[in-house]
Image (cartoon, rainbow, N blue to C red; front, side, top):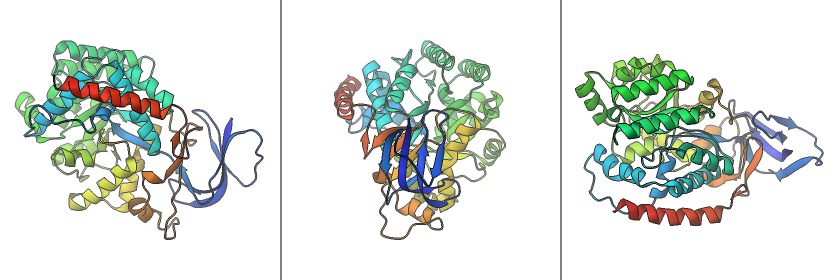
Length: 422
């Protein structure tokens, strides 16, 4: 059954062309949209009057961390971190070690709902739960499917918890890739030895996938690589062949020298910027200098709001980066190019967002970018269509019981925080 969006102002997400029209939305992964002048209400599953509202392509998250969903409001760590490595050790690694099945499910459901509410219908996630590895990706996938969010998942393979856990991460990755679209996740160079990285490279090749890895988020990553391997991080990853794949995602890429930036630019991999996380961890400012134009945006688990991430990238970029209104928008939308280029399902043209944006000033194709940076935010997301299915209507999730899930997640957050203090 199809959906009709009548009396809409449709904005072409590539050209910014505005068109007053009615939109026929087909359901399914390969569903299309048609801009029509006349319609017959019979046969439509849903009819939404979009008078005074804007309709455009929905959003997608280039890098997320489901496992951080229950961190909001938690208490201080056992030790106050003094550097980036200690932030990982005493906060995030303590958290992911404490996750169990119910906590992961709660995290995935709440993340999927938050993404939907903020207008995103496709999420690329990087998961870690060292004491609940087997089946963790299927658990997350099921939760995302329940809400109606398409996904590209991976498990964060790492040696920081020993060889056995690294092997379990590799096994979970292969098991998932056998029947699902996904990536080969690695934490970062400094927690992955040569043996594990070599096995990960074999999986990338075997399943025609790509690596999803944190790269030079902090100088520690470079110091460790130079000390242990006598080379820099990008050089190490390149030697394992990861940069040959257009599915590969290099997250952060802050502390790269000119040679590394040129290597990335001349590779097939995509870079994902996560400005708010970088600021929060005090690791530095992202600069696109020398990296090329395959740069997209993520949230790094800070939240699920891609409009907010884009604004943060733009405003922080005024300090060190060369980023204009148009460049910010291009990075915001680059994830769609990544998905399409690599033939992933779930981001077709029947993924739409309806914005209830009642601007005090005129909005048109000529000034849309000004409104995008300074006006439009996730509070304006009214309805969301994912693969032709209405998953948010009138700002309310339609696919799952939101209040029950939030109650469940609150219970799990208390258990998680208590467990982290043991």
